[in-house]
Each structure stands twice: as structure tokens, then as C-alpha cells.
Length: 83
Image 1 (spheres, rainbow, N blue to C red):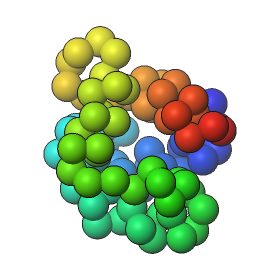
Image 2: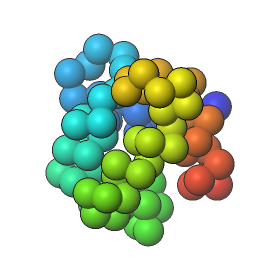
Image 3: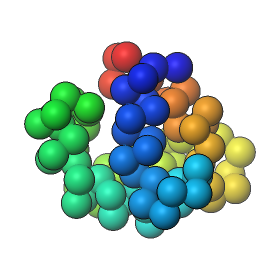
């Protein structure tokens, strides 16, 4: 799993509890996405709208528990963003 996935996960983990909720992913990508893209953490095309952020969460939530672990998150974003 890539260092970029860890950096992105940590940036999205707004409450720093080691997991991501749908609300955190949507909120953080909306507020931090452009800055993260400018820093090269995510590709610019990775910064989408609310529906795109929700879809990313859904794709990552492999076990359907509405909570993302780093492993679930990294497995999808590494593929999706080509890391």
C-alpha cells in the first residue's frame, strides 16, 4: 500500500480515530480536495463532487459496515489513482 494512500487517509480522517466515515470522506474531500490535489496527494481529476466522494466511499467499503479501515481504503485508491 502506497505512502500516498496513507497521506490521503490521514488527511480525510478528520477526527483522527483511524477510520473513515462517509461524512468524513465527503466533507474532507470537499474542503481539502483542491489543496490535496495541488500538493500532488491526489490527481486533480480525483477531486469531484459530493456524489463522486460518496461513490469513492462506497467502492472502498468492501464489508458494508459503513466504516473504512486504512486497508479497505488503500486497496481501492491505489488502483483508482494508479499508485
